[in-house]
Image (cartoon, rainbow, N blue to C red; front, side, top):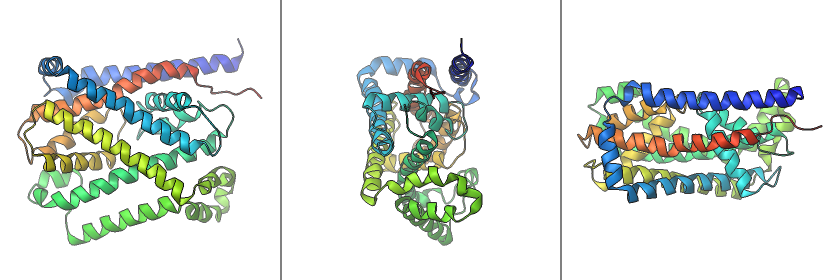
Length: 327
């Protein structure tokens, strides 16, 4: 067997092994799951299986939208089918499951491409992720501005995120959002700036691909991201209702936006996010509801549906990745 083929198979086995190891370890030995009553969760899932089925279906719609978004962006360097794009998305989730801040997602996606430059594809994928990050930060900032008074007296909440609420912090947040929007729609300016430094000249032929996107195309990508945001936010709202978290609709929407905002700003490994997600959800929702089990259960099921199940699905696609190409 050729050495490249052998090495490719070994890499795929290692990826699948680590993915399943992290999933298994997180589900069975995570101290943060101690407050969750799994028997209660199973009872509710059996009773409201139709509603949970809707949440699962929404997961597939969510990743389908992401696949359409990535296919739209990657078409600048290679035309791919929607199935190939979906395969890339699920493979990326599997690889990212054990890597910090989902870095592995970029590699998991680009190795599904047949002929285009993979480094260029990584930069395109970064821009794609930037659109989703921008969406989460914009919505989260709005929520933070509206809800900040609820947390003014809560030192534990503020110290957890190292936040000090003041007029200056709001000006800083507004400036950060403006800057993020500006650089997203004018990424080519950033590319030109980087190209001026001789140390980064070797990146020119790769990073210049970002300059190919017009403002209209970037707006389309941002709208895809907003649609995804609405889908997984709706999943969370449905689960909060299923687990009888007593919070009014307006406060629940703002709280969900705030939870996603803080999770995004917290560095973590994808699979290990359940600990962060649970802590953040409790800190935010406990201002409006005392149903600890319901909050944690909703967070846990959302994590399983949107990350664990896709990671398992993606493991079947890992063996179709092409790490080495024929000359």
